[in-house]
Image (cartoon, rainbow over all chains, first blue to last red; front, side, top):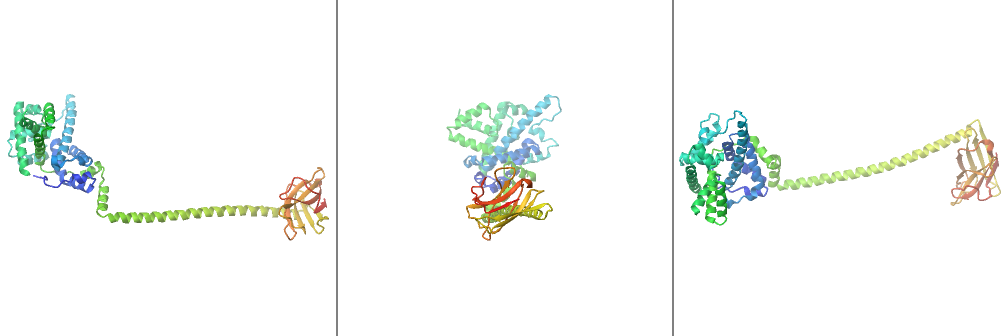
Length: 188
Length: 261
C-alpha cells in the first residue's frame, strides 16, 4: 500500500507559487488520486478530467491547507473524492433521465455486483488492493463503507441496496470507521 | 447527546454518510468540543485509507500537461521557471544582453532617423536648386531667343545727367513680348535702393514698371522681361533709382537712363 503520511508536505511551497513543488506534488500523488477517481467513476476520461480539476484546486487553494488538520494526501483525496462524487451524481441524474425515456442504459451497480462484471477489469484490480488493505474488516462493514465512500450513497440507500435495516447499516459503518481509525493510528 | 454519540456521527460524516440533521448537530457541537473535533479529524484521515489502499494507477502521460495547463502552469513555463529559479545568473545575463541589444537597436534607429532627416533636407535643397537652375535655363533660353530671333528689335538707352557714362541695350522680341536688357556703367545702387525700369507707353499717361534690378560695383547688369506691351505701345524706356523693391510709380525724375523706341 502506498503511504506518504510521513513525507514533508509540498503544499506550503505550492501556496507560495513554487511550480517545481507543484510538479513534484503531481508526481507524488497523481497515481493514487487517479486510482481513486477510476474507482469512483469507472471511466478513464471522467477520471482524468476530475484529476485535472483536483490539481487545479490544489494549485489555487494550497494556502488553505492546514497540516494540523490532516496530511497532504488526505487533503488531496478529500478534494478528489468530493469532486468525483459530484461528477458521479450528475452523471447518474443524466442516466436516470435517459432511462425514464425508455433507453437501454447500464446503470452503475453496487460494489458487490460490479466485482462480478467482466468489463470492470481495471476496477477489479483496484478492488483487490482495497481488500488487501482492509482485510481485517468484516466484509459487511467494508462493503457498507465502500458504498458510502466510493459511490456516495446515503445510509438509507445502502440499506436499500443491501436489503438490510438502516440501523444495522449505520452500526456496521460506525464499527468499520472505528477500526480504520485504529489502523490510521498504527501508521503514525 | 454524548461525546461517543457525536463521534459516531463523525465516523459517518467522514465517509459522507451522515444525514443532514446529523451533520448540523455535529457542526454545532464541534464549535465547542476539542475532543470531538480531534476525533472528527482522525475519522476524516482514516476514511482516506479507503482510497490510499488502492493500487496507484499512473495517469496517461498527456494528463500531466493538461493538469499543468488547467492549473495555469504550462510545462514550458514550468521548466523555464525552474531553470531560472535554480540559476538566477541566467536571468541577469539575459537581462544584460537584452538591455545591450535594446540600446544598440535604439542607437541604430536614432542614427537612421537623423540620417533620414538630413537626407530629406538635402533633397529639399537640391530640389530648390534644380528649380532655380531650371528657371535660369528658361530665362537664358528666352534671352538667347530674344537676342537671335528674326523679329527682335533693339532699343538703346543713353546715360543721363546723373550718370552720363551709363548705357543700356534692349533686345525686344516682339512676337513673344519679352526682352533682355543689358546695363553698362551704372553706379552701384545703395542697399536701401533698387533700380527700376519704366516703360513709357503711347496708350497710357503713366509709366509702367518693367522690373527692378541691382547693379554691383562693376556697373553692369542684365534683366529679362516678360509680358511686355506690344511693341507699338512702347514709346520709350527709362531707369530711376527707387526705394528697395520698387514702387508703383516713379518717385522722382532723376533718370539714369532713357531711350526712345
